[in-house]
Amino acid sequence: MDDTLRHQIDLAAFPADVQVTHVPGPGVVLRATQGGRGLELQVTPDAQRIYGEGPALSAALAQLKQAAAQGLPDAHPDGSFERLVFIGD
Image (cartoon, rainbow, N blue to C red; front, top):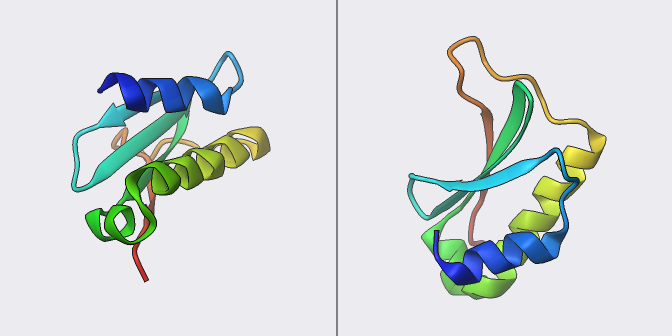
């Protein structure tokens, strides 16, 4: 994860018990986890191009933070997490 993305994650101020990481995938995939619960949000390359990389990632982080505040979903039986996709319109 590059320093700029780590800085944006830090600025989003997630609760202390929520970990946010950048995971491999198409575009930018962010994963918020808390215990055995979690959620991934994929920001497609089109979304980054249309909205700008910074604003698209900021919107994705805001969505993940809101999901964390409401309670992240349980992991799937295979250990994977639900994934939301932020696309360019």
